[in-house]
Length: 218
Image 1: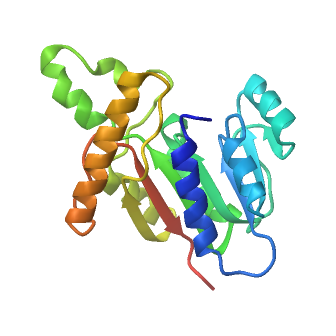
Image 2 (image 1 turned 90 degrees about the horizontal axis):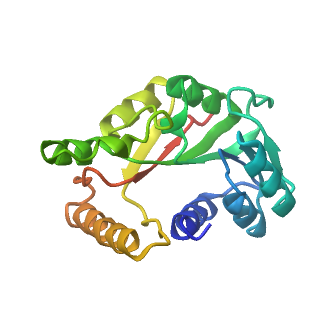
């Protein structure tokens, strides 16, 4: 989980800082991978669990953190309003029905519940590199089915019933290879700087972004 370490810590800080309810909040991490975020949130006192579609990855995650089960969001079953927060890190772009996924998550959340997700924004890079014959493989077909701009994602979230939507660049990932790691830090820092300098107006295209949205309170 070195790749996602900074991303996970930022998400954990945000969720823990925003929690004001009594008791132990419940969280579901969709597409939880090896369970790194589930484990982190459990360490911070949350009743966190994850669902992961890959049998081998889910098995490895369950050995590390028992609160991980095999399955997809589509097949996942829980009572309406079961969770205070749902997270998805680089998941929505892989789902065949992203709008249906957002509607299902809306139903899983309590009133005033939080959805926090991170998605790539690849299209601007592809368009930039297309004239020189590069960039098409960045979509990684058939695994990446969609690419979401912040405006499109905002409209989808509103259509699913969410409000109080906020998008920002977030902390960069930490790739293992030096070249990608330097690039991630540089462009992540540039995106964060532009976002801060413009009062949150400018979201640098081509950089992965975090989005948080909430269900209406009662």
